[in-house]
Length: 527
Image (cartoon, rainbow, N blue to C red; front, top):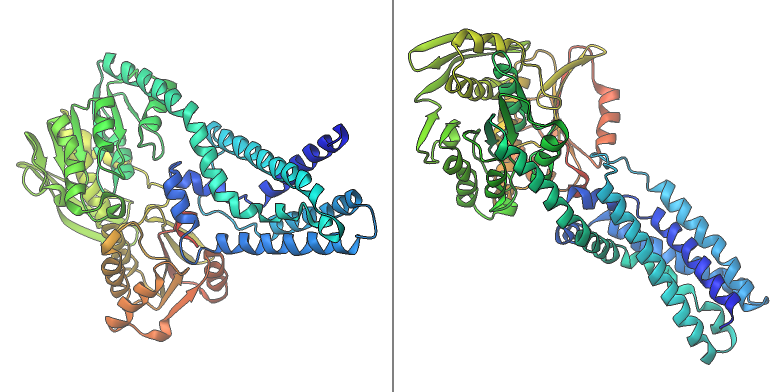
């Protein structure tokens, strides 16, 4: 090949790869939601009925037909000019696909350094593969004559089929750099934690971790200087980020500890070395990745082995610990009064009782506050100090958060729904006057219990005026449970997306109605 042709192929490959990157805009977000697990990402992509896979197959077909058609139509010109002209429909189709596939992400992509590196390597791989294919077919074309020679680059239209494999490969390549780098980052944080004289507290459980962490921080701040991991930072890198960026100039450090697989809590405990802990409760959440409820119990129980002094929620009382406060034994939340403007209850610590009111909604809020208060009591705070701290607790966004708009009450419980939280949310919804609506796609990550738990969820909706099910993932199971429990089939509707549900609500909600948004599935569960 001539030098000019080499340059042309290189430039064309860069342009084609860049255009193809535009058509894979949702893939980075899914990889991020998969925790940068190539295996999890590929399972999602090739899941039966995945619309992204179908759209990419359709894109490949359209690219093939259009480029082939343009090469055929301009076959009266020289081969290189016909090939060049065929880039126009290729570019047009890619741009059209990009703008027609602008589906709003439920979980906005975080433009982290890691994601940018993965995307950069992915683009480079697309360029390299496209260039290699073009060079190969250019040399192969020497043996081809006539009209067939015009179609030598049409094979590039098949590139969408390689999107998932190339993105997974890019992710693995970046790990070669990221894993050691992250380990150094985490090791630096572990050293700071080991050298700090502050009291370390770990909080884990199948649900309520972020809420209890925020509650504990609010209560303990009445007496101590407290630093807690931000947002839902509950992984080694998340904890390390808090420690390395903020430091540990405090009396108490609270680390939220998440787990999706056996071994996650042990890794976090070795890093933080907590003296105190809270295990909020245990349910089938993440059963899909843990494999069994027994594994979940054992994994959450690891914190009890490290911390020694542990506060246990009711459903976590099965976990043994050398020194523990167990709800219902050493402390309790009693006389819970549920209202539409808040919750009232009594907290008991051994023989001491305090009356409490909070603007937070639901039975779960009272139980979570009790866990945070028990920790504060264990750390030497008086009942009066605890009560003052409780009064300063603010609602956590998207955890049964109440708001009003145009005379309609909105209950936002869209963050990471679990079976226990769902029960409490529906219980609160039924307290309101007027028509009561629920919008939900069901509950995920329940493994073999997914059908059972979603049928139970559907049954709990009986008595509501309107049930709106979103998507295709679990809604048939929820609907089955609703109807089996005596629900009115005229009151249940299914829509494909949350946007469709919002449009339905905009048309039919009236002043005085209340709507509960129960769970908003991340994009990895929306096919």
